[in-house]
Image 1 (spheres, rainbow, N blue to C red):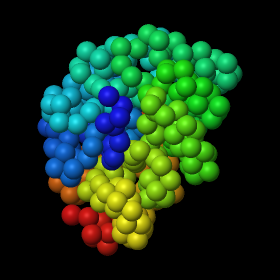
Image 2 (cartoon, rainbow, N blue to C red; image 1 turned 45 degrees about the horizontal axis):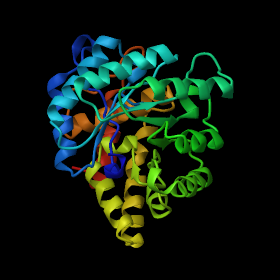
Image 3 (cartoon, rainbow, N blue to C red; image 1 turned 180 degrees about the vertical axis):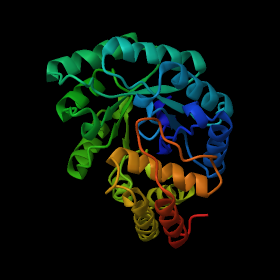
Length: 307
């Protein structure tokens, strides 16, 4: 199954309506927006999807809505991101029930686990999960890095189906790509979470891109991926440069509100401006962007040729 995984898999935002309920209609339009752009899968309840902000009831609504709307056209990855092994296993049970293809799992957080506890977490999850498990390297958020040796050991033991690497360490990513290739038939899939170096990552052996900014311009990342895999590195670099300009939206409110709020709010505001979702509301306690910031995002969208 994992041999079919790769390409552009956007980590979907979670549109919210008044009262901070999931805006199901907007979420369905967002899924349609990505499918029409030619993406190779979707990832619900990742960082961009505000998974850790949402109660379990809303998490289930998101997964049910996305899986139903996708209807098997592409694989649906589900974030099973939580503080402890037992909570992660409960999220995996729900993801399996609604028909997801795989789950994405970080190291435990809130407490700071020892490397031996991180390994125990992944081994326990992988052995009890009803779905393939992709590890998620996200040290900026969970404050624990998945050591490369551990990732390769889990992969060699057949306990993880792949890794999404959002470490920002391109050297580590290339080393992992080499290590994964050495596993031959059991080779896991490797995804980059980078918005800004995705072209280089694909050129050096990464299977796909799971980048938050692909919420806003999934077609651009699809063009980049196709060019990079076809060996047209000039075209891929040009697309990457254009997307780097679009990346400016995440800085629009960063001086006034939290980095996460600014990033998620910017993507939602852009999608709202583009008419894909109804509202740019983010889960509480995140502060919303103001009218001036949204106007600046409109300018960046126009300058980056995103319509």
